Length: 325
Ligand code: ACO
Image (cartoon, rainbow, N blue to C red; front, side, top):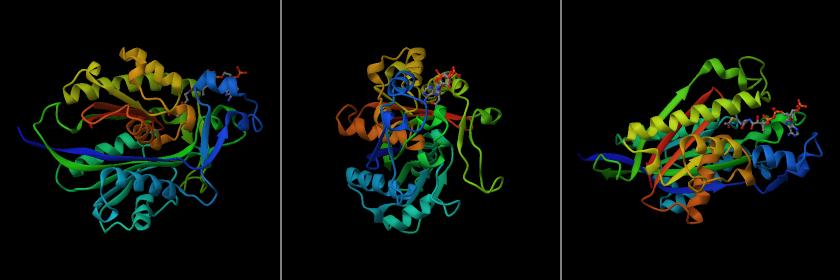
């Protein structure tokens, strides 16, 4: 059977210049480098400059993804930005990215699923590309998470950082089996009844403020390991392969202990799991494309390999998405 798949043809990542170490944060709150490394695996994170907005980070990542794919901004006919830290309440950050890159008039919108945003956005883009509605889609995860942090709360302010990652997706012909290049399957979930364990306490229609990130860390941890495991298994089943067939797992980079917990439950060797959390902390929707970009550029992930990305975040939302590069 001949089918059209949406293939990832270029990936790019961008981290802002300013490095904030654990020791830097220990001057603001009662914490230590040793505590943060032991509980999270995080060593440092990046902070966007005062004059950098989420769209600026997104544009840098997008330019790198365009170069990697050999495409130009003029060819982009769909932009989806996954972000929970938009430049403005509106217009969407995707509209601002379109203007800054000089892309032609075409659909551009944001997806808001917090840390799961990139997994959601890939799945939405697949709906356009595999149906022939877009020929060169730009899918970005971009965040200025440090703007949401309460720097008096040691339970949250050590966990997050700023960054962006982007992919270009293009149609490719396949046979309809798991050997095809391109997106092969996904599983998306949301359980709104657990929204109160990870949220921001402000918004335009409630407080009229941006608010700060609030979290019940242990509850988030337990839900993450159970939910992500379920989504990975559902994603593999929907695409028709076994979890053990996957060459590389590229998880949302929240916490090294969550990565290890999921790998243990799934019986995956940790050397198949890409981990970059140590040097950029949790960049929410940006973390998967950032990790993907790094693992492709250093030669770990190569063309033809089966890759599975997964995430859980505020909502609670969670999901997984599998593709052959
Ligand atoms: N430095 C030092 N001590 C701290 C810090 C810190 N930065 N943060 C919390 N503590 C203290 C607490 O106050 C508590 O002290 P107490 O015993 O005197 O009350 C003690 O450490 C233990 O607190 P716990 O919350 O039980 O610590 P835990 O081992 O659960 O680690 C952590 C906390 C790292 C937040 C963990 O729960 C976690 O990783 N949760 C997942 C959070 C996450 O990744 N969120 C990201 C968004 S969701 C996602 O992306 C999947």
